[in-house]
Image (cartoon, rainbow, N blue to C red; front, side, top):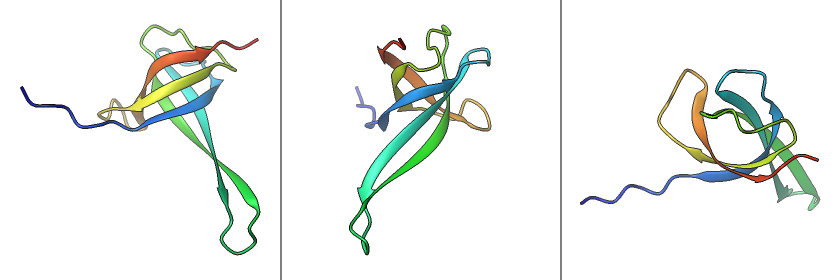
Length: 85
């Protein structure tokens, strides 16, 4: 039996859950600027597939790369790590 390739996973925060079976997750990454040596935070928004509509705004979630499900949806929900307060 052939093994599946490793999939990219990321941890982010849900910023919108108004769609049916979809959510918007923002993933922040910090890196050191090459010239100025200061830490810079950049963020990217991903549209994710949430089959059971379990995530809510403010939740911390783990997402995984998958095949394209629509024009912008290429990530799916793996788990809700922390519920919003």
